[in-house]
Length: 196
Length: 246
Ligand SMILES: [Fe+2]
Image (tube, rainbow over all chains, first blue to last red; front, side, top):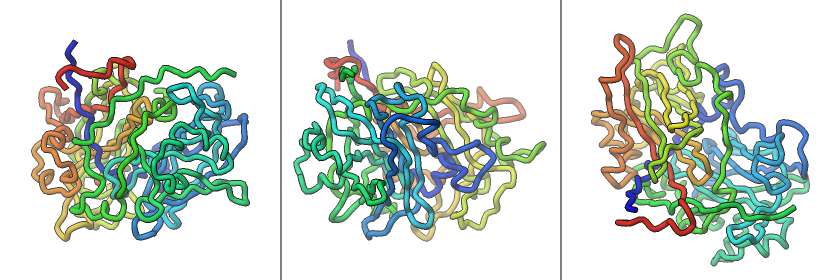
């Protein structure tokens, strides 16, 4: 059977005012939607280790950008996607703070999810970044530095040619118990972005 | 528990020809915000091939009516009234149902309601500029608004954005996630805009231009613009990923 594929609609930058459409309450436009989608990932008691992830997105001059929006999507503590744990959405959306450029997600440490060949992947979170000046949303992954054994067997991490870039995908546990995950769009520590 | 591998056929490889490059210097903001290294290509897994699902019950009755959803009781947003409607399809031509669409735009004078906005054109007290909807089983969506105005922006000294509406589409998987902008048929500013011009393909640009459909206009009320959107296609089966003629 012959089938002609349609072409995917072109991306255009989210621009500086992405908040109006995606997080209007954050942009101090209240009264249209009750709450911003993705602001809460936990809607009640949940299983697993509750964690906080914070970070900033740095541009090529080293400045934290203050008009980005980050979304994350992840498995629950059992490795299921919004299926086995009804108080957990698995999806978060957070604009970077308009003063500090900080983002923060209050979530749960994900369980392991199989890769296409059945091997288990290390616990990880899928991350997507948009902002003014980003022409096509950027996909990356967040892994955890206290999962060294699982990371060493991960089907994707182990396949990355430039080993010196692997740390850009690994969140660092802080003394506070939270994880730090900075994203660098350019420069010496440019984050690995994926075409997946 | 078992670790059964789910049906992970994955998505068709993204064709970057119709997308802007990361670095497009005429759009100055891209210069320090564009990754310099190639994207790494890997088959994704569940995290890329699934995504959050939103129920229609989440929507308020005015979410898709930008003329009313920020207006004072008994009042309406100012500007030429339009309905934007279309379908969300994937690359194989199948409709994408239950797709969350979020839109945002400037008011009829080209002014955004945002604390960082400095353009001197006035706010419309009855216009917020955000709307959202979820596609039906045929991938169809529609919303009502006013035509946004063009506006000057800090890039070149005389750069004006063509009138446009921003669209965010959730798709059914993170791999399909897309943000884009819709333009209006006949607007000469489209072809002068560095952001539009970040797309190096005239046909691809034309697919971002909504067409005016006077046959569907609501008499004495609103004109209709048609805008269809295509998201990445899911592979049918593991072996059915080779398409004749491509
Ligand atoms: Fe805009």
